[in-house]
Length: 293
Image (cartoon, rainbow, N blue to C red):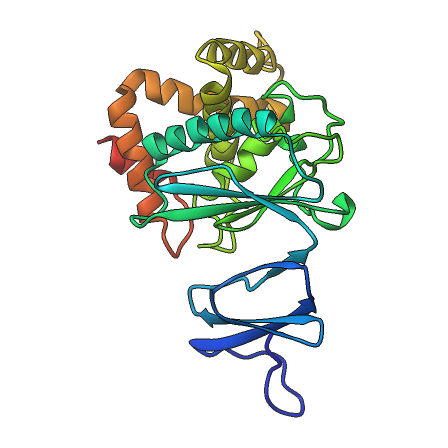
């Protein structure tokens, strides 16, 4: 977002601290990266100034004529922005489901921050322009159709864009869980977050299954494992590279097997060790092994 200096500049390093100014029509809601410093209104416009630091690796702006509703409380506030006002009954169920899912992620992956925090869930007005990361890679494992469109994507560690084209928000849907879990798995801390090798490449899918179990109940666990096992042939074929679907299913089941073998508490401790060890660098299986030991 910052222009490089010089006549033939090809790059550069952003300053450690800088300000981003956003001007939008009055009546718009504005959410930005960094820390919002001041807001001014003049001539039918709103100008928001937000201080950016080296921790804001991916500066962004979300603005629009949304309805804002707070549906969380306590340590984790959840702020929902939708184009249309939502019924209180639907929001109550949504709030309870999200609270259970986030508590489950905190228990397995560790709390995202030590301080009270907020998560923005914002409806995208044009789905084709909001989403870049398809969720179909985990769709079969989690019981969704192969043709299911992308429903959500993290745009920052605290902001989730969602597709509510079907009507009332159903954030507990399976396709949303991997994106929401990305905040706990280190999204934004490493550019290669989505480029892991098996079995670690299946960690987002495993996280999604945890979210689904929290939302739907413990019975979904057995169904998820059964579905993954069906993707693995009983008799291995001729020697050679396995199909990607088989590799993905085995990688997914690896986390279940490790948890059952080592015990839930040891497994969770190992996962948290791995996630802490990967701060600022790539995720490695050796970190998980050290955590188990």
